[in-house]
Image (cartoon, rainbow, N blue to C red; front, side, top):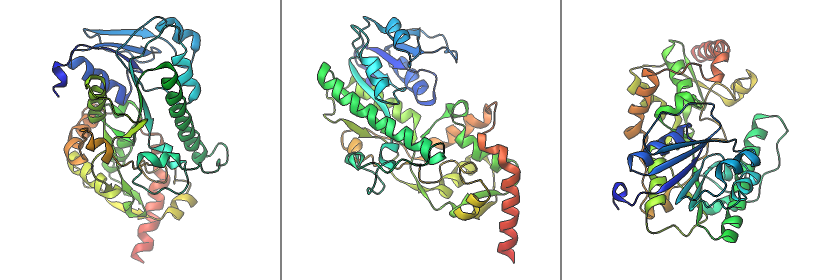
Length: 349
């Protein structure tokens, strides 16, 4: 299907300046559609033809209703639904018609479950939930996020059925993209460590499998969902790169595109935990990095690229426009270097 020559659509994006929402906004505008962005106004959007901006707080029912009351769209992508209340708040706006609606969900709906093993298939999200971790811990914050997304998906299914519109939860793993330096800065965290000349701790030698999705591919999937005549008769769909790599392979690829030759130091998980670095020194590592299986999406004609195809552009963007702030974990760099020296001495003994 030639998506660029599809009829012009009225598109609503709830959130327009994040990594994925920004890529989606550019894809819809490039395809000739009329785009309305709902945002709080914290980050400016470039002036573009066929782009309208409505200022509203996604978490405030009065603000949202003031912006969307009586508005009708052909397609809505919701990047900011984190719980059932968020979905209900949007779909309770008087005389608001979203058209087809895609809620951006996450692979963490699988990680809060018990029993299923990665790579996760769509039906694995029905696994019973794990017990709630200790409040305030890193595990707890991730559990709250995953459980909130499960609840948001359930609310979307129920309300879409009751209101009679088509809806889908698009479940994504970690998103890689050129604009990530302005958002999570996770890739920048690795690039900054690899570029500063010191050794780089690699949890468990970097053998953990990882699976990501490129923001441009997720944006094209949204464009296809908006424009295609056929709609997947599914409540949810995974999208991710075709295959998996290890964390080390991914980082070595990124280093090569950056012209860097880092010295990786394998670090056992126990050593990282004892040093207080397990949750800060290594983005994409640990149990909260999801690996959804995209086979069903691919069977429906969706596609996604692997890091060997998209990562060069992403790395270049980070290096050409470095983020104004380091990754939050980089504040512990001195402790990382101390642990790396200790591990290297032990390895050479």
